[in-house]
Length: 396
View (spheres, rainbow, N blue to C red):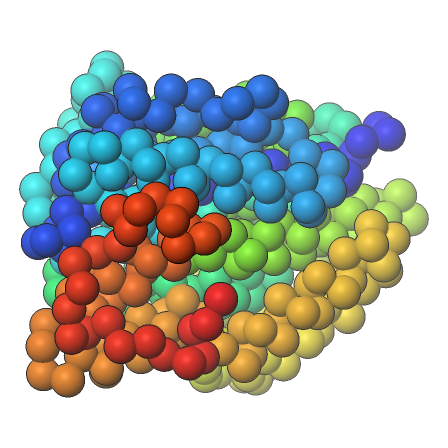
């Protein structure tokens, strides 16, 4: 109970890309073998569904500076391991350009591939998942109910996947649309208890649409393995500071929900069609257009929803000392743009060259930047091309 709503951790999923072709590379087994494990209590590295993906899960953190340190260290170690095998680490919600990458070897991955068939064949989708500690599963389910209306805003703030197969999809988060191919995606259904939640998931497993109880696709869920809420709304974000912003807001949402529950305030269910509309709008526009208020169904702007979210969690942010960090992070996003906006600006600066190459090159440089010009002897940089003109709004 003492740590409820205070401890947090982040899982970041990454792509591995060839710096010459800019296509994904099935190098995960070799990269993970070279990377080993993060030092000390800094979490662990994992394979993901496709052999072109790797994941870093931080250890348990109690403050944002420690989380930021672990995230940066994990990215640097994976980036160096990638370089050793001639590939680069890239943080993005979808692959800008794709190539075939086999499913990761293993019985569970084989079962997933057999169950979902073409949906996972080229599912180069990566997310930023935030875990926040809760005291028990009944509380976890009740907290998820409170989080549901705010999850589309977390998606919009993280939107970082406008391109796939070398084309602009027209969406800020195409990853969210790809995820709709799985059963039970989007906002989590309202449940009155852990028992009711487990029974519902069990029915989906029995129906054959989920591989097991650990493989649900909702934007938030009680973790099946840890005493946490797992929030999975966000695209994989390009920079560490964006992941820290997601974590800070998510923890504040959980703490606000815990305070509401302690005061006897239960969450009202979100009407499913309004929830789906809010998710679609967030995926389509990110922070640059309209948004849907899931409470009322009213059409508003994405930044209005972000402002309401900030007011909703302000007491929790003040209590944790994170208010200034979140304000600064939101201000940076508003002035500089989301990852989707950065990618489109990079494509627009290609001056007739391959726009997707420009996008990949920018993402590589920003995913794990060297702390000084000599740190990696320049090896982390993609080949220098005319597409890499710096954008003054993207200065670190």
